[in-house]
Image (cartoon, rainbow, N blue to C red):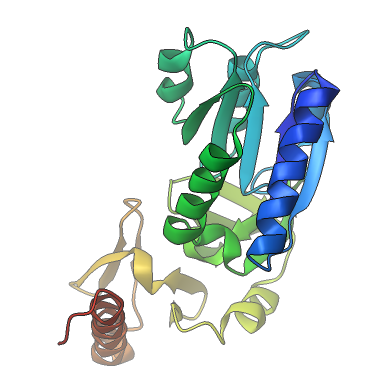
Length: 250
């Protein structure tokens, strides 16, 4: 798991890193922790989806933690933001940009351990495989669950859509994407040049595949029934898996 700590006090960031390393050792995990002394330095090296968790001090020299988080949210809706502060004055601001948690300083071991337990239990996106690509000069590592569809675009570009409706245009070839994703059961090629994530399919109707991000694509006319059956089988298998994990039976 990649973790970022953004704090202008080295004593605080060192203490937080030590607690995180202790947690990783106790749980037999590997954390890659990057520490930044200010929001400006962090944003200069930041790329979307590169960190599972970002710890942000709210009060920093230069731009604040909240301002830094707003910049992160412009291109990355998935990273979990945990704010660190000596005051609760900015709690409303923090949660308005979908902060995951809010920890008052000095950081207490028990509180941080509870936050990390919750992250590991409830957020699996960051432990998924990721599709790495460059789009408009920016490097991305998009978790497989977040990919909604892939299709060729104009001028030898490939259009990758995520589940939030964001579009990325990359010079990767469609065949290369298919080769990388074809062994993952959630991806299905619904016609000659469109690959979709079955988890993101809302419905198959009148020869069209409707996605949850409001996109729609035509389905192979001769394989409509086959594709619909594969989608239904996939959804049924997922329901069974979820029920099994909850201790239910189907």
